[in-house]
Image (cartoon, rainbow, N blue to C red; front, side, top):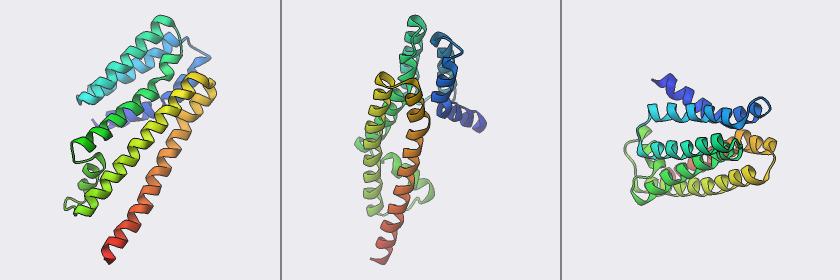
Amino acid sequence: MRWRIALVWLATLLYPLVIYFGLGRFEPRWLALFLLLLVAARAAISRDPVWLAAAAGALVLVIASSVANQILPLKLYPVLVNAMMLSVFAMSLRHPPSVIERVARLREPDFPPEAVAYTRQVTQVWCVFFVINGSIALMTAIWASNRIWAAYNGLIAYLLMGLLFAGEWLVRQRVRARNENA
């Protein structure tokens, strides 16, 4: 089962590049099959309502792309993914524990109140990231060339996520050291 999950995540990560490189070889309605397979695979491994809603949204994009034979609906998939991630993170702020707290508790079940507050702030930062990243994904889908869309959504967005992860890790080390010295 883990290899299936890994394969679906890999396909999701490679999605913009598959679409970009497929554009010169296939009509959009045929490229929509890749998204359909990705959505079906994701729905098969996760029965979580959020991801089922994302699958339904992606299915709408597949149908729109297939019927109109247009690439734009397929380019909107990263926008949908960012919107779904934003909703997951934002809902966890309304109904704690936050996503980041849940992940952190996997390693450290005993969590001081300062850590709960910190993970809540990190979850808020990720919400802002998803708003900005999703907005840029939308702008590149609508106004940028296919090359710029693929570069942003297939590389730059992942580099920015990596920078956010690394930056948060550095901040966390400083916060942890400060709290241990206090």
